Image (cartoon, rainbow, N blue to C red; front, side, top):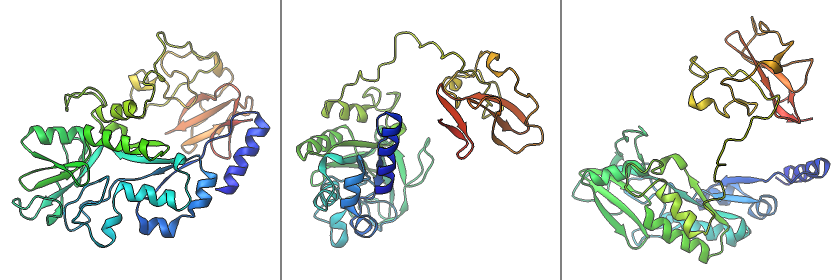
Length: 338
């Protein structure tokens, strides 16, 4: 990290541009942290340290437990007393990481369990394995927040875990420990009180992004963080009218499904940053349309113009352009500064 930081600083001086930021997602488990990281050095080199303060408990345990509890539970013993957000964040801070660089991980999902005995459904109840996979996420042992809302609507009993400031819910032999709007708000206030640098969410698409499952509007969990952390929700407001395309940035991009490239995902989807639908071919004059016949899939330089390159897919030739000021770099098969 020290070498990478030095290289970033040198590159910034050479190009007269802002230095590239360095961040890392790191473990919250004390056992891993003790053996895997040199915390003071990371604190010196990184701009942001995203602590993965979730998956504290899951179906790998022999009993139920919260995914991301703020505090320990009286049930916890042994090394389990370390499996909570408060302990993990303070461990990083107390061992050399600046608090302002530490970002708290907020999960928009819950870990699920199958109870051994449906009548025994509290924290620490024995389990027989992972919970049933969700309709949309389709992974045993986990439910997205929007799926948890359906679980609750279908008759699950929700319990507020007072000791750990997070909820859990159960229905029959199915049990889930998760976060909701209330626990996100409590954690955000705790974050501010302890002067940590901010929040990291895993993952955006597991929040109720359409607002159709939880009756709490779009992105209810993430919006709690926006409000609690005093973030400007208008900072990323799109322009009233689309920005015009940059001259010369035309391409024909292969479709992942082999279908038309005029679908909604094509806008901004090409590696050139241009539009793949309705684009002009004026920027591809002189490029060989049969270049990729007999060649392996991949990207190849166009010798007459370093800003352009060929993309080969199943023997078909696609013409691509790097953004203005960039050239195709064969060492990484990417667009790079010249």
